[in-house]
Image 1 (spheres, rainbow, N blue to C red):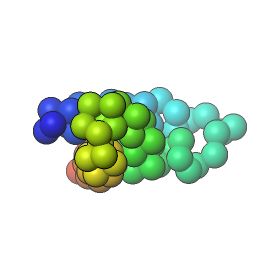
Image 2 (image 1 turned 135 degrees about the vertical axis):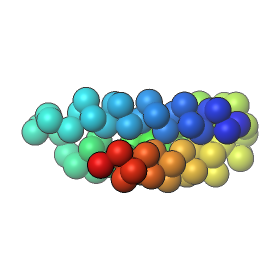
Image 3 (image 1 turned 180 degrees about the vertical axis):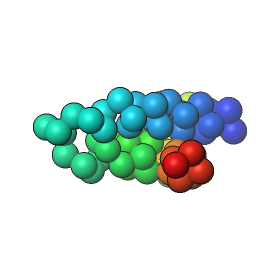
Amino acid sequence: MILFILGMASLTHLVTDLLEPLPELPNKPWKCNMCLGFWLSIIPACALYGYEGILVAAITGIVSETIYKKLI
């Protein structure tokens, strides 16, 4: 579960960095690490962990935002 959270948070950070320069996309959820982290990980997390996947997706969003804050 920890590797899933760290992996999805890292991928979310990369995807957010790729989408950030696009002006036609709205800021939320596409350019916000926390929002995009939650929405990208909710389906795989629920598929793997059931109802606990909602909590795992929320933690993934927070970890993604923490990665963003620590790198910048």
